[in-house]
Image 1 (cartoon, rainbow, N blue to C red):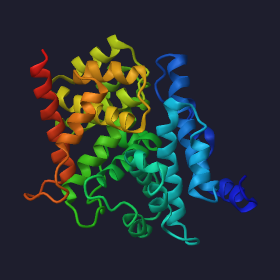
Image 2 (image 1 turned 60 degrees about the horizontal axis):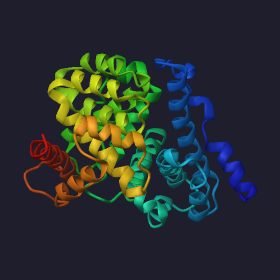
Image 3 (image 1 turned 30 degrees about the vertical axis):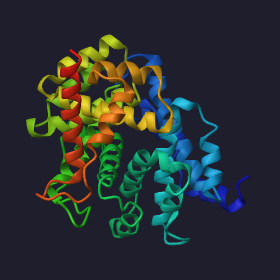
Length: 328
């Protein structure tokens, strides 16, 4: 049971559970059932956030999350990543909550937790980012933090980031760079959010992406492909529609789908939709996508100026192409 201070802390720092509702955000509604399912994703995220905000220990937070419906737990771990990140950024209490969280059961949800830290960055003043920087030391995965930041901005500042195509100049994180890749990682998160903004309507999402400058579309499609696989709410015909609309960016959609499949396989949260989406968008099973992802994992400090995270994405795309060629 949470302490009185924990309950107060939750009330003080937790946004409204309705802040992600479609009528509040103005998102496209494909159908009432799809809207309800995507809003449930948002509520499960907020449940994870609230659990971290209120918990007196990592174990207490994780026990709360593990009681949630299986298909939504990944979103709750993402929300908890944000909640612990916010607590690390506050001027009171210790500042290694995220590290402690990742040293426990949440370690298998590391992708989602890093993304959640990006949400925290979007809510904290920038002079506190140095504290969070120490909580996400993995040189390969830390660009997922920017994915989370981009998602947050597109979700809550949709007109600016999605419809006006705003891009933050000289983004200051990570401090050691490379600064040019920060924009690309942010776009991957923006593309992921656009799956929600478009209400999981493949044509609506593709229409929005195709209005962006061509140089940004590959990363936007990759993010949407990830969301189409992880969050879903589309049938097989709609998945094929989205893949056709992606056109030349189909390899990026497949790569995003493989990321999503890997996140679900590694946490034991694979669903029937995971299998369908991975098959349509990537031409593989979730388990095959995970193997390709593991085999493509590069050294954490590559030479040549290209971040390991981008080399990883390229390797996954190449691995998927090779497997599709071997299994026409």
